[in-house]
Image 1: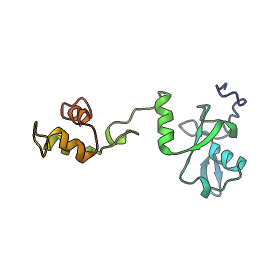
Image 2: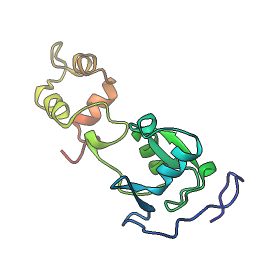
Image 3: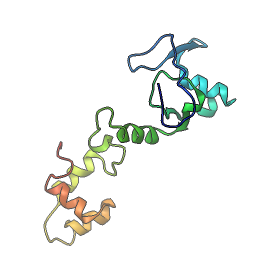
Image 4: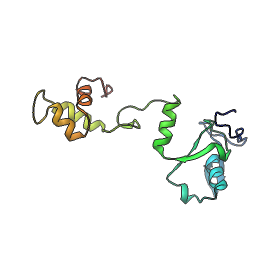
Length: 148
């Protein structure tokens, strides 16, 4: 597969592939993603070094194990990559990568909101929940968080 980074061709895994297209290999009795092992091995890292991190594909090819096509990141970075590339279902509400509120907080805002009220008006709720007044208005009018 070609890639826009000019870092050589993908090295596609020809062994076992999972349902999402990632290469799998058994290491110490555990099934692991090949690209994680390739990254870890190439850069001389331990499993402990990368345990809370995601090994991401710059080439967007899940069966690629070329260490030059891989980079470490967080779950947030990975979700952002997926969103930028237009892949996968876009999570809604509290599951969205950029969500600042929980479903419960949104329902609370809707139940407590009273127009022009100092205690439960848009300004007070925006301060309490650390969001802008326009976001409060979008929540109340169901322009935002429509699924609730």
